[in-house]
Length: 129
Image (cartoon, rainbow, N blue to C red; front, side, top):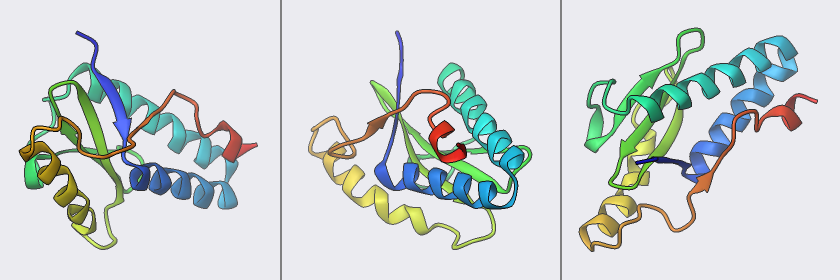
């Protein structure tokens, strides 16, 4: 079974903001950050349970070369990226995003977010050009 990878809009905005921040300082650092996000997504899809349980039913993938974590939930039909969180800023800020998610799951609606986003690798190329 193929598992879909989807992002909450806020998580996508965080990733894009980080790419822009790195691009303002170094295009090569921004490209490497984008590549590391792509590699993390692939690893998470291939082995979603490989990373330890984290807060509120999530798991956390730590990027190797950058101070960011990918916070995600494994659901029955998809993997939902909840946050692309900087490791030194506002710990746990993303937890409020899960309130809506958990309410919808409890109601058996099957979705955490009304409009999660499906992404393709290399999506940050426009930010880098």
